[in-house]
Image 1 (cartoon, one colour):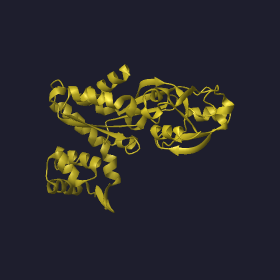
Image 2 (cartoon, rainbow, N blue to C red; image 1 turned 90 degrees about the horizontal axis):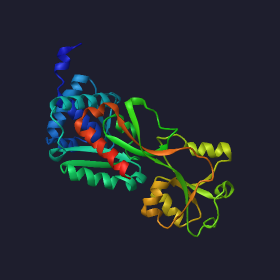
Image 3 (tube, rainbow, N blue to C red; image 1 turned 45 degrees about the vertical axis):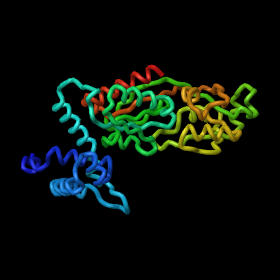
Image 4 (cartoon, rainbow, N blue to C red; image 1 turned 135 degrees about the vertical axis):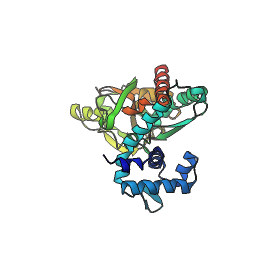
Length: 307
């Protein structure tokens, strides 16, 4: 162990690296840390010399983290959480808390949970700042690096993604899948059968993090693949396309019940066994050492239980 080398790296350096991995901007990091950009740059220079790595380099107009910086991200995040816990032994007081948390969720989850969660959190902790991202912009890599605190997403219960990087999955809501269609659709007044379900084109949802949905594999194995005519990034866009076409959209019943985009669409049960689906909360295991994050976790669980 090189104690002399270790003594040159302080918590200031680790916090600066942590925030830089999140913002990828010296200016934004300086604003978050209430420092000048030159002070942040000086700290980064010291850390670069100690680690013998560039840490961040410019590609066009953007800063990009080096492989070493990305690899250090989860460890630094855990160290900061543990130091914070050590320095804040007293009970967490949401009313006086001043801090920021980042969540990512599917657009469908905004409809179900985001508004209720924000209202509850800000009522009890008015100084807390919530950043809610689309999961298309920040995903599991961001969670592992400490750039996100939680992800909420719908998925097949049989197929949660990998539990690598100490990611914990907890079911928030059980759900079922339904088929949406235009009220003027030729099938609107008919019972949905597997034959007429497969005879029309469908709207699919793109998702780079999850595997092929289990219901797609079940459908292909038991019958045949459905015809995906259009792929879109979110439930809302798919529902809007249903209003103006004879395409079918297979989605969450809970979302269909509350989403403004799904109003006036016809909802029918799926005509085949598709397995079980749910909404899950995902987080990085060491993050529960932070009392504030544990409190936010409890609020998410509570809001989901009331939905």
